[in-house]
Length: 268
Image 1 (cartoon, rainbow, N blue to C red):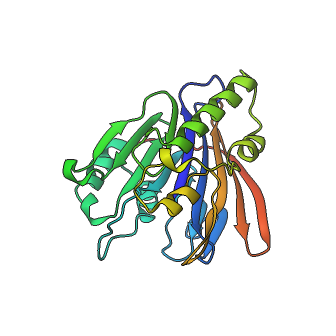
Image 2 (image 1 turned 90 degrees about the vertical axis):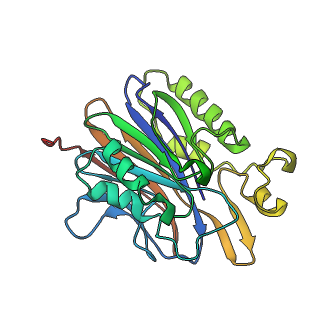
């Protein structure tokens, strides 16, 4: 489970600014933010088990991030959803073409929300394979502030609405000035407030819904310790600078790092 909030094409300095928490079992191996082996074209954290990712970008300004859809039933042998961002980042297709291609096989995956973007062409597309009955959907992401949790984009879950409000409030406070990204992560993505059970989605049992209702998740479960393993911020400026900040939980504790680079515009 993850939650992300972002502003798209609606800020004087940042055409794109994203904050994202990734939740996972503490025992699942995870590689922190780094340029990936095999050419060093992809930057992001990486799942040490299946090899996929939840958020990553490329040197030429392609970005992809993913959340799972909260549901009770799973496929018996699904494909790994974590490979979907990787497939886009390695693809030469534009976001729309990639989304249309993906929808042809979307039924082979458990429920997902995927956002893919090309920062050179300023194109961003949201694709989901839920609801099953409607065969999912593809839509262009409109300018403004959006929240993505474990339902469709901009679903008004309590923690999503709380994060949207706090994000807008902090952006308004900065005005037209540069944003202190690490400070935003600390203020917004470390929120451990849990919501009243009466307003929760009621998909999972009440106890599970309750511990998942905070933006920053911490829980002891029958399967082991579960919670937020990393908090990330991706900022893209009008000058073409892309900055990836990550605070991740490693064996030694929380580690923080930032990678900044100028995107390479390519002829497509």
